[in-house]
Image 1 (spheres, rainbow, N blue to C red):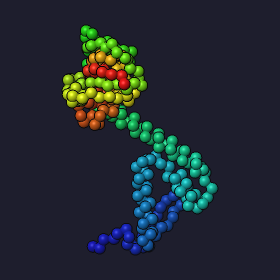
Image 2: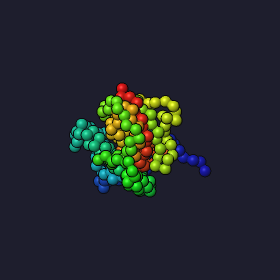
Image 3: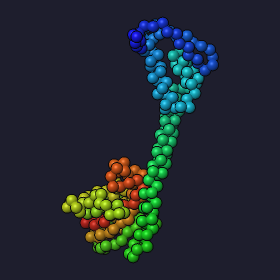
Image 4: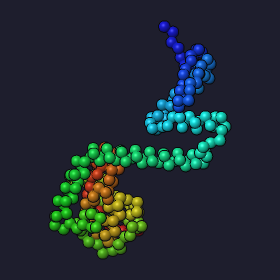
Length: 238
């Protein structure tokens, strides 16, 4: 049997209902007729996938008003504002749904992290700040003390609660310099407690670390909602 393509010239009559206002006869008798119909089906599928609650009669009214050069019920400027706000709402809803699904997926990691921190804070020498950051002073310093805007030079050794090393300037044999306002909140807060020459061990709750946004999407050692452990030695406030 011979196949009929979209570009074939056929005398096909379609009946498209427009919001209950009657029936429009459409014939696909030329190439551009088929192209036009194909564009319609493609856009309709895309729109219904993105906005399943789409009010089709209202959509068609807006479309036809533009085609017919009619007065618009909403100005173009207002339409842009409405669409931008709707897009932001959809993005926020999608992000919230993704975070909710991720939280359920990594609920075990979060529970283990809370248990780890609860047990850890009872150990000798562990101090806890108002934010929940835990730390142990391994060596006090006597030099300058940084602020949140300071640039510092440090050595660090980072592990997960079970001791898995995920990053270490100590192992690389190279110190690192960075601005304290460009790192995770636990680092920003913790290093400000130190003076040059000090060495502290930090136990950072997940909300002061990466939270749901684990590096590598959670494919590496650091999982979403996982607390982190760092030994940090402050060499210099630059």
